[in-house]
Image 1 (cartoon, one colour):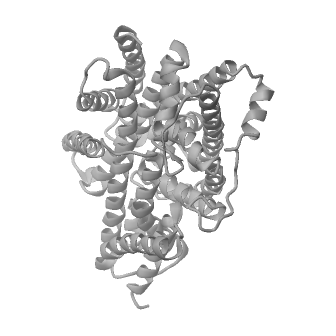
Image 2 (tube, rainbow, N blue to C red):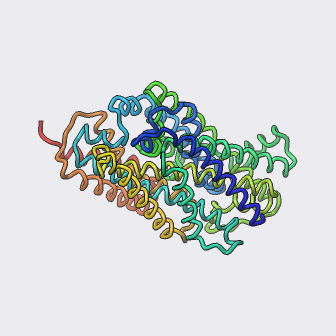
Image 3 (tube, rainbow, N blue to C red):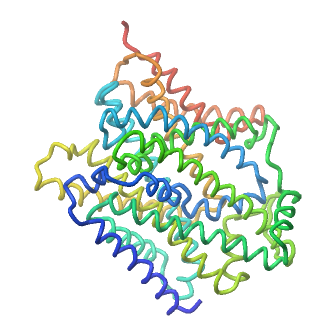
Amino acid sequence: MSPFLLFVIILTYFSILMVISHFASRHIRDTSFFDGDRASPWFLVAFGMIGSGISAVSLVSIPGNVGNNNLYYFQFILGTIVGYLFIAFVLTPIYYNLKLVSIYTYLNIRFGNVTYKTGSLFFLVSQSFGASLRLLLSIKILQYAFFDALHIPFFVTIIVVLILIWLYTNKSGIKTIVWTDALQSLFLITVIAISILTIKNSLNLSLSEMAKSIVHHPYAKVFDWDIHSGSNFFKQFISGLLITVALVGLDQSMMQKTLTVKNSKDAKKNVLAFSFFIAFAQTMFLGLGILIYLYAERYGINLATQNGQFVNTDDLYPLLTLNYFGKIGAVAFLIGVIASTFASIDSCIAALTTAFSYDFMDIENQPHEKRKKIKTMVLLGVNIVMFLIVMSFWNSQGAIINTIFKIAGYTYGPILGLYLTGLFSKIKFKEKWVPVVCVAAALFTWLLNEYFIRTFNFDFGFMNIFINALLTIMFLIIIKKKA
């Protein structure tokens, strides 16, 4: 792809986002950046959340991971559906009844200030790493595909992407993001459809033949019943449920969009519609995963292996689109990467800014002239932290989606434990011990997983979030106050 065409695509795409930002930023209030004036159409929010829920990690990691893990990720998707039902009918009404902006304020109302700050801090750490790793993969793809040829250093690419996101979100934040993410979700789904059709045509298959090729492929194994495997059905299903509750229902970046809808009834519709959209999109990714390996087999593309496993599976989809799918495939992939990057990272930056501003800077009770200054300084700090994390992980290898879920298991587990304790019990506890409990639960989870792997050859896999939350609840019971 020529540098000129690349520049035109990026400039055109960004110009569209700036136009949307301009119209969305009219008639804003002090809180518009954080709550979107609670006037967003629920269907628009649901569709736009596809881009936030997918990101460039899912775009390349889910299809690529099929080579090593078959279609076992579908077991995880089944669990997520149950998780979304819990979010729609349990968590969403609570957030609306309490009129929350930062969802971690619930912990202050239920337990107290120390628990509130602890829960928010765990979110800030987890989201900082999760968002940065998603940004890392996006930058790696853009760097490999386009910017290395222009001799642009990767740290410059990181800075440019963060500045572009700042420009169209700085003024009205989540109010703009709701609209820009809907557009980016449309681009993302279109890119996947183009990739599937390109492979279908390259292999000279009809739609029915393509479906049969997917179903009968050796990788088309959906259920894993091996109890020792990290991809065992029960581990995947339960972790899908719990990770969805934690990474969506207890995640400020995802719920902040839902809370821009005007009432609880529409917010439930939003969550349920989004659950359908995201499950459908992720299932498309799995089908695409088999197709890209089928394409590689048909055309004799050699893939690096180690110990019987494919190495760097995240590289396969970009490799094919940029070198084998023609100019249309390359352009579509570039737009998909940009769309998934902006749609996931802008929401995370807004959420991190919101959580820190409300939970630690008490922006809600600050005078009017001070609010904008606080928001701007926090937003700048969030961008700097993300830049440093991406730089630190630049040389990492393997499927990044696995790394993200592993980190989430240790950081969101305590948050999940705190919320479950608050929702389904009436206990109070000695708050000064809450930070110790949450850190200890995460540490013990890691130690237990290492012990079980070495002693019983049993990997918790994504189930570490369940163990972590369970340990958190047990430790909270130990420090509870006497009646």
